[in-house]
Length: 269
Image (cartoon, rainbow, N blue to C red; front, side, top):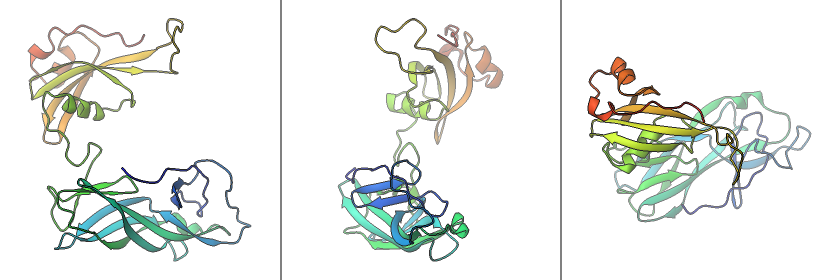
């Protein structure tokens, strides 16, 4: 995605955390750094990004775009002049930057702790079509499968996730459905298209340097069982025991052929 580089800085906008748009990127409040304003400084207008973009709509021509954004509420000094600008386009994506102005510095305004929804409009250079609409808040929308004029908000798996099945992309989505660390590794999969089971290894503690002492690479092993649904693989049971005993307590219909020969797992290393 073609965007400016992200810079770290500290931003004070009342007491709410928002994204500050600098000339070469965005700054997130509370991220550390020098130059934070204090209540004794004279207030001045600054440009910020909204907390999130919550909805998007297209006109009949496929070019007139309206976006709803969540911004600080409670008064004109909290948020004003919300606008949307097309920053880039490609064959697959249209990037739109959404910003607003707010008063920074001076005494904090407690009313700005509230949030409200504001709408900005922009005209796309060409109809959106089947391309994805992506905003600076890392929110994506698509017209595919949407109830127009409203665009469909895409999820963590993207706008067009791979269909549930016995494929690596589908297994990756199954891992994303689990509450596990980002760098969790996956073991062998046993799948028939409707049911799935695989082991995951979650490393715990600090990374181990080469030649580290035994026990440095501590982690947890878990076995997860899934059922295919329209939304993707749904986790239905977890276990460290051999065979199917744990999953059959929850889902007797899980095929024994996929789990009968599975060995017990060690929970720690």
